[in-house]
Image (tube, rainbow, N blue to C red; front, side, top):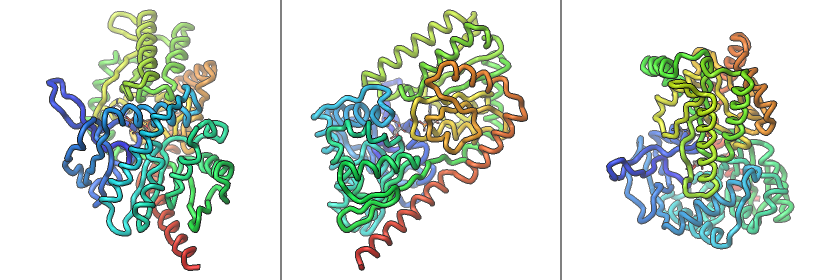
Length: 463
Ligand code: ADP
Ligand code: G6P
Protein backbone atom coordinates (compact mmCIF):
# COMPACT_ATOMS: atom_id res chain seq x y z
CA UNK A 1 0.00 0.00 0.00
CA UNK A 2 1.12 3.52 -0.79
CA UNK A 3 -0.39 6.97 -0.59
CA UNK A 4 -0.61 6.96 -4.40
CA UNK A 5 -2.25 4.46 -6.67
CA UNK A 6 -0.37 3.97 -9.94
CA UNK A 7 -3.09 5.94 -11.68
CA UNK A 8 -4.25 9.41 -11.08
CA UNK A 9 -7.53 11.04 -12.04
CA UNK A 10 -6.85 14.13 -14.03
CA UNK A 11 -8.99 16.36 -16.12
CA UNK A 12 -9.03 15.90 -19.89
CA UNK A 13 -9.06 19.09 -22.00
CA UNK A 14 -12.83 18.65 -22.57
CA UNK A 15 -13.41 18.57 -18.80
CA UNK A 16 -14.00 14.81 -18.63
CA UNK A 17 -12.21 12.71 -16.04
CA UNK A 18 -9.36 10.66 -17.45
CA UNK A 19 -6.94 8.23 -15.82
CA UNK A 20 -3.23 8.43 -16.35
CA UNK A 21 -0.12 6.96 -14.74
CA UNK A 22 0.92 8.90 -11.64
CA UNK A 23 4.28 10.62 -11.77
CA UNK A 24 7.12 9.90 -9.37
CA UNK A 25 9.65 7.31 -8.42
CA UNK A 26 7.50 5.17 -6.13
CA UNK A 27 5.01 4.32 -8.86
CA UNK A 28 7.80 3.81 -11.44
CA UNK A 29 9.43 1.27 -9.12
CA UNK A 30 6.39 -0.67 -7.93
CA UNK A 31 4.21 -0.72 -11.02
CA UNK A 32 6.38 -3.08 -13.10
CA UNK A 33 6.99 -5.23 -10.04
CA UNK A 34 3.40 -6.00 -9.18
CA UNK A 35 2.15 -6.42 -12.73
CA UNK A 36 0.27 -9.71 -13.14
CA UNK A 37 0.63 -10.68 -9.48
CA UNK A 38 -2.39 -11.42 -7.26
CA UNK A 39 -1.59 -8.29 -5.20
CA UNK A 40 -4.00 -5.52 -4.22
CA UNK A 41 -2.66 -1.95 -4.32
CA UNK A 42 -4.28 0.17 -1.62
CA UNK A 43 -3.88 3.88 -2.24
CA UNK A 44 -5.36 7.23 -3.10
CA UNK A 45 -6.55 7.96 -6.64
CA UNK A 46 -5.70 11.64 -6.65
CA UNK A 47 -9.06 13.40 -6.15
CA UNK A 48 -11.34 14.26 -3.26
CA UNK A 49 -14.74 12.79 -2.47
CA UNK A 50 -15.84 9.17 -2.33
CA UNK A 51 -13.30 6.48 -3.26
CA UNK A 52 -13.81 5.60 -6.94
CA UNK A 53 -14.30 1.99 -8.03
CA UNK A 54 -11.37 1.21 -10.25
CA UNK A 55 -10.71 -1.52 -12.75
CA UNK A 56 -7.72 -3.83 -12.30
CA UNK A 57 -4.55 -2.45 -13.86
CA UNK A 58 -2.28 -4.98 -15.52
CA UNK A 59 -3.87 -7.69 -13.41
CA UNK A 60 -3.41 -5.84 -10.10
CA UNK A 61 -6.48 -5.03 -8.02
CA UNK A 62 -6.88 -1.35 -7.16
CA UNK A 63 -8.40 -0.49 -3.80
CA UNK A 64 -8.86 3.22 -3.45
CA UNK A 65 -8.94 5.15 -0.19
CA UNK A 66 -10.82 8.46 -0.18
CA UNK A 67 -9.45 11.79 0.95
CA UNK A 68 -11.69 14.75 1.71
CA UNK A 69 -10.66 18.23 0.65
CA UNK A 70 -9.56 18.79 4.25
CA UNK A 71 -7.47 15.58 4.28
CA UNK A 72 -5.85 16.60 1.02
CA UNK A 73 -4.93 19.98 2.45
CA UNK A 74 -3.84 18.87 5.92
CA UNK A 75 -2.51 15.33 5.38
CA UNK A 76 -1.09 15.26 1.83
CA UNK A 77 -0.17 18.90 1.24
CA UNK A 78 0.25 19.62 4.95
CA UNK A 79 1.97 17.06 7.15
CA UNK A 80 3.32 14.86 4.33
CA UNK A 81 4.57 17.56 1.97
CA UNK A 82 4.79 20.66 4.14
CA UNK A 83 6.36 19.02 7.21
CA UNK A 84 7.97 15.65 6.47
CA UNK A 85 9.15 16.14 2.86
CA UNK A 86 11.27 19.26 3.53
CA UNK A 87 12.49 17.94 6.91
CA UNK A 88 13.62 14.63 5.38
CA UNK A 89 15.40 16.45 2.54
CA UNK A 90 17.92 18.33 4.68
CA UNK A 91 15.37 21.11 5.34
CA UNK A 92 16.40 22.73 2.04
CA UNK A 93 13.04 24.47 2.48
CA UNK A 94 11.65 25.30 5.91
CA UNK A 95 9.46 22.49 7.36
CA UNK A 96 6.20 23.81 8.78
CA UNK A 97 4.53 22.41 11.90
CA UNK A 98 0.78 22.66 12.51
CA UNK A 99 -1.22 20.67 15.04
CA UNK A 100 -4.13 20.42 12.58
CA UNK A 101 -1.85 18.74 10.03
CA UNK A 102 -0.76 16.15 12.58
CA UNK A 103 -4.40 15.36 13.42
CA UNK A 104 -5.12 14.82 9.73
CA UNK A 105 -2.03 12.63 9.35
CA UNK A 106 -3.25 10.39 12.19
CA UNK A 107 -6.78 10.27 10.79
CA UNK A 108 -5.68 9.39 7.25
CA UNK A 109 -3.15 6.81 8.45
CA UNK A 110 -5.96 5.17 10.46
CA UNK A 111 -8.13 5.07 7.33
CA UNK A 112 -5.35 3.44 5.31
CA UNK A 113 -4.70 0.91 8.08
CA UNK A 114 -8.40 0.00 8.16
CA UNK A 115 -8.47 -0.36 4.38
CA UNK A 116 -5.48 -2.72 4.44
CA UNK A 117 -6.95 -4.66 7.36
CA UNK A 118 -10.14 -5.14 5.36
CA UNK A 119 -8.52 -6.52 2.20
CA UNK A 120 -5.49 -8.48 3.47
CA UNK A 121 -5.77 -12.29 3.44
CA UNK A 122 -5.48 -14.07 6.80
CA UNK A 123 -1.77 -14.34 7.61
CA UNK A 124 -1.02 -12.22 4.52
CA UNK A 125 1.66 -9.70 3.79
CA UNK A 126 1.18 -5.93 3.70
CA UNK A 127 4.01 -3.79 2.40
CA UNK A 128 3.54 -0.15 3.45
CA UNK A 129 5.36 2.44 1.34
CA UNK A 130 6.73 5.86 2.15
CA UNK A 131 6.54 8.85 4.43
CA UNK A 132 2.81 9.54 4.05
CA UNK A 133 1.99 6.36 5.97
CA UNK A 134 4.51 6.07 8.76
CA UNK A 135 1.87 5.38 11.41
CA UNK A 136 0.22 2.59 9.41
CA UNK A 137 2.48 -0.30 10.50
CA UNK A 138 1.63 0.26 14.19
CA UNK A 139 -2.07 0.87 13.54
CA UNK A 140 -2.33 -2.13 11.26
CA UNK A 141 -0.59 -4.44 13.72
CA UNK A 142 -3.14 -3.45 16.36
CA UNK A 143 -5.99 -4.30 13.96
CA UNK A 144 -4.47 -7.42 12.41
CA UNK A 145 -1.74 -9.08 14.49
CA UNK A 146 -1.80 -12.06 12.09
CA UNK A 147 -0.21 -10.06 9.25
CA UNK A 148 3.40 -9.84 8.18
CA UNK A 149 4.07 -6.10 7.82
CA UNK A 150 6.88 -4.45 5.88
CA UNK A 151 7.64 -0.73 5.67
CA UNK A 152 9.85 0.93 3.08
CA UNK A 153 10.83 4.60 3.03
CA UNK A 154 11.57 5.89 -0.48
CA UNK A 155 12.92 9.23 0.72
CA UNK A 156 15.96 9.93 2.90
CA UNK A 157 15.63 9.43 6.65
CA UNK A 158 17.24 12.46 8.27
CA UNK A 159 19.97 12.66 10.88
CA UNK A 160 18.83 13.02 14.52
CA UNK A 161 19.60 16.78 14.62
CA UNK A 162 16.87 17.34 12.03
CA UNK A 163 14.37 14.66 13.04
CA UNK A 164 14.41 15.92 16.65
CA UNK A 165 12.61 19.07 15.45
CA UNK A 166 9.41 17.09 14.90
CA UNK A 167 6.88 17.83 17.64
CA UNK A 168 5.44 14.28 17.39
CA UNK A 169 8.71 12.43 16.82
CA UNK A 170 8.07 9.60 19.31
CA UNK A 171 4.72 8.67 17.75
CA UNK A 172 6.21 8.58 14.25
CA UNK A 173 9.03 6.26 15.31
CA UNK A 174 6.63 4.03 17.21
CA UNK A 175 4.34 3.84 14.18
CA UNK A 176 7.16 2.58 11.98
CA UNK A 177 8.18 0.04 14.60
CA UNK A 178 4.87 -1.74 14.04
CA UNK A 179 6.56 -3.30 10.98
CA UNK A 180 8.56 -6.54 11.01
CA UNK A 181 11.14 -5.04 8.65
CA UNK A 182 11.87 -1.35 8.04
CA UNK A 183 13.69 -0.71 4.78
CA UNK A 184 15.61 2.42 3.82
CA UNK A 185 17.44 3.45 0.66
CA UNK A 186 20.83 3.78 2.36
CA UNK A 187 22.69 2.33 5.33
CA UNK A 188 23.12 5.85 6.75
CA UNK A 189 19.33 6.18 7.02
CA UNK A 190 19.07 2.89 8.93
CA UNK A 191 21.79 4.17 11.23
CA UNK A 192 19.96 7.48 11.79
CA UNK A 193 16.77 5.58 12.60
CA UNK A 194 18.45 3.27 15.11
CA UNK A 195 20.12 6.21 16.86
CA UNK A 196 16.77 7.97 17.17
CA UNK A 197 15.03 4.92 18.53
CA UNK A 198 17.61 4.74 21.31
CA UNK A 199 17.51 8.47 21.98
CA UNK A 200 13.77 9.11 21.79
CA UNK A 201 12.24 5.77 22.80
CA UNK A 202 15.05 4.36 24.91
CA UNK A 203 14.80 0.98 23.19
CA UNK A 204 17.70 -1.43 22.58
CA UNK A 205 18.72 -0.92 18.96
CA UNK A 206 21.52 -1.59 16.48
CA UNK A 207 21.52 -0.58 12.81
CA UNK A 208 19.99 -4.00 12.04
CA UNK A 209 17.74 -4.97 14.94
CA UNK A 210 15.49 -3.21 17.41
CA UNK A 211 13.78 -4.82 20.36
CA UNK A 212 10.18 -3.64 20.84
CA UNK A 213 8.06 -5.32 23.53
CA UNK A 214 8.40 -9.02 22.78
CA UNK A 215 9.32 -8.50 19.12
CA UNK A 216 12.46 -7.88 17.12
CA UNK A 217 12.09 -5.37 14.30
CA UNK A 218 14.68 -5.70 11.57
CA UNK A 219 16.12 -2.66 9.84
CA UNK A 220 18.20 -2.49 6.66
CA UNK A 221 19.18 -0.70 3.45
CA UNK A 222 17.52 -1.85 0.23
CA UNK A 223 18.27 0.62 -2.58
CA UNK A 224 15.27 0.71 -4.88
CA UNK A 225 15.67 0.27 -8.62
CA UNK A 226 13.86 0.12 -11.95
CA UNK A 227 12.81 -2.45 -14.49
CA UNK A 228 16.15 -2.24 -16.26
CA UNK A 229 15.36 -4.75 -19.00
CA UNK A 230 12.06 -3.08 -19.81
CA UNK A 231 13.67 0.36 -20.17
CA UNK A 232 16.49 -1.08 -22.30
CA UNK A 233 14.00 -2.90 -24.55
CA UNK A 234 11.92 0.26 -24.91
CA UNK A 235 14.94 2.43 -25.69
CA UNK A 236 16.16 -0.06 -28.30
CA UNK A 237 12.84 -0.22 -30.17
CA UNK A 238 13.12 1.01 -33.76
CA UNK A 239 10.31 3.56 -33.33
CA UNK A 240 11.99 4.99 -30.21
CA UNK A 241 15.36 5.17 -31.99
CA UNK A 242 13.68 6.95 -34.90
CA UNK A 243 11.92 9.30 -32.49
CA UNK A 244 15.26 10.12 -30.83
CA UNK A 245 16.74 10.99 -34.24
CA UNK A 246 13.75 13.18 -34.99
CA UNK A 247 14.06 14.93 -31.62
CA UNK A 248 17.73 15.70 -32.28
CA UNK A 249 16.82 17.10 -35.66
CA UNK A 250 14.04 19.21 -34.13
CA UNK A 251 16.53 20.51 -31.57
CA UNK A 252 18.61 21.84 -34.48
CA UNK A 253 21.08 18.93 -34.73
CA UNK A 254 23.35 20.39 -32.04
CA UNK A 255 26.69 18.79 -31.27
CA UNK A 256 25.53 18.03 -27.74
CA UNK A 257 22.26 17.71 -25.94
CA UNK A 258 22.06 18.06 -22.15
CA UNK A 259 18.89 16.69 -20.56
CA UNK A 260 17.31 17.01 -17.12
CA UNK A 261 14.06 15.32 -16.13
CA UNK A 262 12.56 16.20 -12.75
CA UNK A 263 9.35 16.67 -10.91
CA UNK A 264 9.19 20.41 -10.27
CA UNK A 265 10.53 20.11 -6.75
CA UNK A 266 12.92 22.28 -4.71
CA UNK A 267 14.93 19.19 -3.80
CA UNK A 268 15.93 18.63 -7.42
CA UNK A 269 18.40 21.51 -7.68
CA UNK A 270 16.80 22.95 -10.83
CA UNK A 271 17.61 26.56 -9.99
CA UNK A 272 21.26 25.79 -9.18
CA UNK A 273 21.59 23.90 -12.48
CA UNK A 274 20.08 26.77 -14.46
CA UNK A 275 22.45 29.20 -12.79
CA UNK A 276 25.46 27.05 -13.66
CA UNK A 277 24.29 26.73 -17.26
CA UNK A 278 23.61 30.43 -17.56
CA UNK A 279 27.11 31.31 -16.28
CA UNK A 280 28.66 28.87 -18.77
CA UNK A 281 26.73 30.58 -21.56
CA UNK A 282 27.81 34.00 -20.30
CA UNK A 283 31.49 33.01 -20.16
CA UNK A 284 31.30 31.47 -23.65
CA UNK A 285 32.34 28.00 -22.39
CA UNK A 286 29.07 26.73 -23.82
CA UNK A 287 27.57 28.06 -27.05
CA UNK A 288 23.91 27.92 -27.91
CA UNK A 289 24.44 26.70 -31.45
CA UNK A 290 26.57 23.74 -30.31
CA UNK A 291 24.82 22.74 -27.12
CA UNK A 292 21.20 22.74 -26.01
CA UNK A 293 19.69 22.06 -22.62
CA UNK A 294 16.35 20.26 -22.48
CA UNK A 295 14.74 20.71 -19.07
CA UNK A 296 11.66 18.59 -18.43
CA UNK A 297 10.00 19.70 -15.18
CA UNK A 298 6.58 18.18 -14.68
CA UNK A 299 4.46 20.22 -12.23
CA UNK A 300 4.04 18.58 -8.84
CA UNK A 301 2.13 19.32 -5.58
CA UNK A 302 0.92 22.48 -7.25
CA UNK A 303 -1.14 23.86 -4.39
CA UNK A 304 1.77 23.84 -1.93
CA UNK A 305 3.17 27.37 -1.66
CA UNK A 306 6.85 26.39 -1.89
CA UNK A 307 6.16 24.55 -5.17
CA UNK A 308 4.30 27.52 -6.66
CA UNK A 309 7.15 29.84 -5.77
CA UNK A 310 9.70 27.44 -7.27
CA UNK A 311 7.79 27.10 -10.51
CA UNK A 312 7.52 30.87 -10.90
CA UNK A 313 11.22 31.30 -10.25
CA UNK A 314 12.27 28.52 -12.63
CA UNK A 315 10.03 29.81 -15.40
CA UNK A 316 11.28 33.35 -14.94
CA UNK A 317 14.88 32.15 -15.06
CA UNK A 318 14.30 30.04 -18.17
CA UNK A 319 12.71 33.08 -19.80
CA UNK A 320 15.63 35.28 -18.79
CA UNK A 321 18.24 32.84 -20.09
CA UNK A 322 16.43 32.33 -23.37
CA UNK A 323 15.91 36.07 -23.73
CA UNK A 324 19.56 36.79 -23.11
CA UNK A 325 21.30 33.90 -24.91
CA UNK A 326 18.80 32.42 -27.37
CA UNK A 327 18.32 33.38 -30.99
CA UNK A 328 15.31 33.19 -33.26
CA UNK A 329 14.52 29.46 -33.59
CA UNK A 330 17.44 28.61 -31.27
CA UNK A 331 16.49 28.79 -27.60
CA UNK A 332 19.23 28.09 -25.07
CA UNK A 333 16.85 25.97 -23.01
CA UNK A 334 13.97 23.84 -24.20
CA UNK A 335 11.63 23.85 -21.24
CA UNK A 336 8.82 21.27 -21.11
CA UNK A 337 6.46 20.92 -18.20
CA UNK A 338 4.28 18.14 -19.58
CA UNK A 339 3.96 14.51 -18.56
CA UNK A 340 5.34 12.14 -21.21
CA UNK A 341 4.67 8.50 -21.88
CA UNK A 342 7.46 5.99 -21.31
CA UNK A 343 8.40 5.77 -25.00
CA UNK A 344 8.85 9.53 -25.29
CA UNK A 345 10.95 9.58 -22.10
CA UNK A 346 13.08 6.75 -23.50
CA UNK A 347 13.58 8.72 -26.74
CA UNK A 348 14.62 11.77 -24.71
CA UNK A 349 17.12 9.66 -22.76
CA UNK A 350 18.53 8.35 -26.02
CA UNK A 351 19.02 11.80 -27.42
CA UNK A 352 20.88 13.10 -24.34
CA UNK A 353 24.67 13.13 -24.61
CA UNK A 354 24.84 14.42 -21.05
CA UNK A 355 22.17 13.71 -18.45
CA UNK A 356 22.30 16.22 -15.61
CA UNK A 357 20.77 14.80 -12.41
CA UNK A 358 21.76 17.23 -9.69
CA UNK A 359 19.34 17.11 -6.73
CA UNK A 360 20.28 18.81 -3.46
CA UNK A 361 18.99 15.68 -1.72
CA UNK A 362 17.15 12.66 -3.13
CA UNK A 363 16.26 9.27 -1.63
CA UNK A 364 17.33 7.44 -4.77
CA UNK A 365 16.56 9.23 -8.09
CA UNK A 366 15.24 6.73 -10.58
CA UNK A 367 15.67 9.11 -13.51
CA UNK A 368 19.44 8.53 -13.24
CA UNK A 369 18.89 4.78 -13.40
CA UNK A 370 16.43 5.07 -16.29
CA UNK A 371 18.97 7.06 -18.28
CA UNK A 372 21.67 4.44 -17.75
CA UNK A 373 19.29 1.62 -18.67
CA UNK A 374 18.25 3.47 -21.85
CA UNK A 375 21.84 3.94 -23.14
CA UNK A 376 21.82 0.63 -24.95
CA UNK A 377 24.88 1.55 -27.04
CA UNK A 378 26.98 2.33 -23.92
CA UNK A 379 27.32 6.02 -24.75
CA UNK A 380 26.25 9.06 -22.71
CA UNK A 381 27.64 10.85 -19.67
CA UNK A 382 25.71 10.89 -16.41
CA UNK A 383 26.34 13.95 -14.24
CA UNK A 384 25.06 12.91 -10.83
CA UNK A 385 24.72 14.65 -7.48
CA UNK A 386 26.56 13.11 -4.55
CA UNK A 387 23.38 13.78 -2.58
CA UNK A 388 21.21 11.36 -4.57
CA UNK A 389 20.91 7.82 -3.19
CA UNK A 390 21.82 6.61 -6.69
CA UNK A 391 25.36 7.99 -6.25
CA UNK A 392 26.16 5.19 -3.80
CA UNK A 393 25.60 2.68 -6.62
CA UNK A 394 26.39 4.55 -9.84
CA UNK A 395 29.90 5.38 -8.70
CA UNK A 396 31.18 5.74 -12.25
CA UNK A 397 28.96 8.75 -12.91
CA UNK A 398 30.55 12.20 -13.03
CA UNK A 399 29.77 13.01 -9.41
CA UNK A 400 29.13 16.56 -8.30
CA UNK A 401 28.19 18.64 -5.28
CA UNK A 402 25.29 20.77 -6.59
CA UNK A 403 25.71 23.32 -3.77
CA UNK A 404 29.10 24.23 -5.22
CA UNK A 405 28.33 26.41 -8.23
CA UNK A 406 31.90 26.44 -9.57
CA UNK A 407 32.15 22.68 -9.08
CA UNK A 408 28.84 22.20 -10.88
CA UNK A 409 30.04 24.29 -13.85
CA UNK A 410 33.34 22.42 -14.01
CA UNK A 411 31.70 19.00 -13.77
CA UNK A 412 29.21 19.90 -16.49
CA UNK A 413 32.10 20.94 -18.72
CA UNK A 414 34.00 17.76 -17.83
CA UNK A 415 30.99 15.66 -18.83
CA UNK A 416 30.51 17.64 -22.05
CA UNK A 417 34.17 17.34 -23.01
CA UNK A 418 34.82 13.74 -21.90
CA UNK A 419 36.26 11.43 -24.54
CA UNK A 420 34.21 8.52 -25.89
CA UNK A 421 36.44 5.95 -24.22
CA UNK A 422 36.02 7.37 -20.71
CA UNK A 423 32.28 7.84 -21.26
CA UNK A 424 31.93 4.29 -22.62
CA UNK A 425 33.88 2.67 -19.77
CA UNK A 426 31.81 4.44 -17.17
CA UNK A 427 28.50 3.69 -18.87
CA UNK A 428 29.33 0.00 -19.32
CA UNK A 429 30.16 -0.36 -15.63
CA UNK A 430 26.94 1.39 -14.58
CA UNK A 431 24.84 -0.68 -16.97
CA UNK A 432 26.37 -3.89 -15.63
CA UNK A 433 25.48 -2.81 -12.09
CA UNK A 434 21.88 -2.02 -13.02
CA UNK A 435 21.52 -5.26 -14.89
CA UNK A 436 22.20 -7.14 -11.64
CA UNK A 437 20.40 -4.70 -9.34
CA UNK A 438 17.04 -4.21 -10.95
CA UNK A 439 13.63 -3.81 -9.34
CA UNK A 440 13.13 -7.57 -9.05
CA UNK A 441 16.44 -7.99 -7.22
CA UNK A 442 15.31 -5.20 -4.86
CA UNK A 443 11.97 -6.89 -4.13
CA UNK A 444 13.64 -10.28 -3.71
CA UNK A 445 16.17 -9.02 -1.21
CA UNK A 446 13.59 -7.05 0.77
CA UNK A 447 10.97 -9.79 0.81
CA UNK A 448 13.41 -12.54 1.74
CA UNK A 449 14.63 -10.38 4.65
CA UNK A 450 11.00 -9.85 5.65
CA UNK A 451 10.55 -13.59 5.59
CA UNK A 452 13.50 -14.06 7.91
CA UNK A 453 12.14 -11.30 10.12
CA UNK A 454 8.97 -13.35 10.47
CA UNK A 455 10.79 -16.52 11.46
CA UNK A 456 12.78 -14.50 13.95
CA UNK A 457 9.55 -13.36 15.56
CA UNK A 458 8.28 -16.95 15.68
CA UNK A 459 11.55 -18.13 17.16
CA UNK A 460 11.46 -15.41 19.78
CA UNK A 461 7.84 -16.24 20.55
CA UNK A 462 8.64 -19.91 21.08
CA UNK A 463 11.51 -19.33 23.51
P1 ADP B 1 10.81 11.36 -7.53
O1 ADP B 1 10.54 10.02 -6.92
O2 ADP B 1 11.26 12.39 -6.55
O3 ADP B 1 9.72 11.84 -8.38
P2 ADP B 1 12.60 9.88 -9.28
O4 ADP B 1 13.67 10.35 -10.19
O5 ADP B 1 13.00 8.76 -8.38
O6 ADP B 1 12.08 11.15 -8.48
O7 ADP B 1 11.37 9.36 -10.10
C1 ADP B 1 10.70 10.15 -11.02
C2 ADP B 1 9.89 9.25 -11.95
O8 ADP B 1 8.93 10.07 -12.62
C3 ADP B 1 10.75 8.58 -13.00
O9 ADP B 1 10.31 7.25 -13.18
C4 ADP B 1 10.49 9.43 -14.24
O10 ADP B 1 10.57 8.69 -15.44
C5 ADP B 1 9.08 9.91 -14.01
N1 ADP B 1 8.88 11.21 -14.67
C6 ADP B 1 9.60 12.34 -14.46
N2 ADP B 1 9.19 13.33 -15.28
C7 ADP B 1 8.20 12.82 -16.01
C8 ADP B 1 7.37 13.36 -17.04
N3 ADP B 1 7.49 14.62 -17.48
N4 ADP B 1 6.47 12.53 -17.58
C9 ADP B 1 6.35 11.26 -17.15
N5 ADP B 1 7.09 10.71 -16.19
C10 ADP B 1 8.01 11.48 -15.61
C1 G6P C 1 8.36 10.69 -4.50
C2 G6P C 1 7.73 10.08 -3.27
C3 G6P C 1 6.48 9.28 -3.65
C4 G6P C 1 5.53 10.17 -4.44
C5 G6P C 1 6.25 10.81 -5.64
C6 G6P C 1 5.38 11.78 -6.42
O1 G6P C 1 8.75 9.67 -5.31
O2 G6P C 1 8.69 9.23 -2.61
O3 G6P C 1 5.83 8.76 -2.51
O4 G6P C 1 4.41 9.45 -4.88
O5 G6P C 1 7.39 11.50 -5.18
O6 G6P C 1 4.83 12.75 -5.58
P1 G6P C 1 3.26 12.92 -5.37
O7 G6P C 1 3.14 13.94 -4.31
O8 G6P C 1 2.76 13.37 -6.70
O9 G6P C 1 2.69 11.59 -4.99
